[in-house]
Picture 1 (cartoon, rainbow, N blue to C red):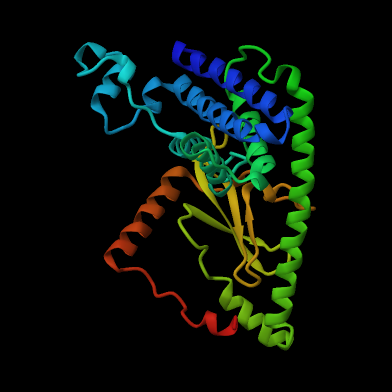
Picture 2: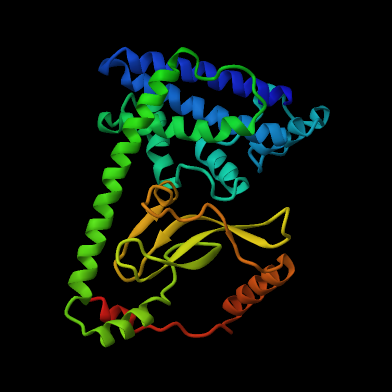
Length: 316
């Protein structure tokens, strides 16, 4: 581990210890807890990036900072102390991209952490109802990153027990929330399609199954919905297997167009029948990425096929 990564690792541990201390001191110190935990999370994300290369934590548009990070500081316009680095959210985005969707924390879960840390730092404000959720977001993220870094000591120290307890509580709350999602999705499915005959329902669901997942998803694979058993879509990012020379997809989201069930990466593994952490697409990298490039070209030039626009009628 290089010196930049080591410095950030030790700094993250220091801030996390301070966060636990503030958390243990009661409600009046919870603002300090979320602030310090946010700083600890940012520094650990940057430690991971800096361990790959120090330039990965630098603000890409600042050339002087890039010169310092790449060992050419003699040509920089300012001292190393003025190096501009990325913030918490951008550090998360970069790490998540490298780890191919295996981060246990989604971008939606990260934002309250960033807001809490910035709120305390800049306006002395935080949402007290979000303290436990924000704090455990940091713990879950750290647990994913620490095994990726060379061991430099006991990161959790005397607070290992509190770490474990907070995660146990968070997991139980997440399971209750997941069951609520599944129940609401089943109810929505029943209200929409319960009055259809078996044949008509099959026709409608076959049409709806082709509805693409909302937002940007690199790749989709069909999967059975755990709520209504219709065809839904697992979305994720792809990478090349080092052993089979085929393309693998790491799922991080599930969407069902029939019942509107939406699951994030942490929920995919909590189901009674969990979705796989990786799916072998059984296609060579050359064939897969050539096809993907051709599809993007068709969409850009208007050469793609028309989507079926009538499916919304059946969902009303």
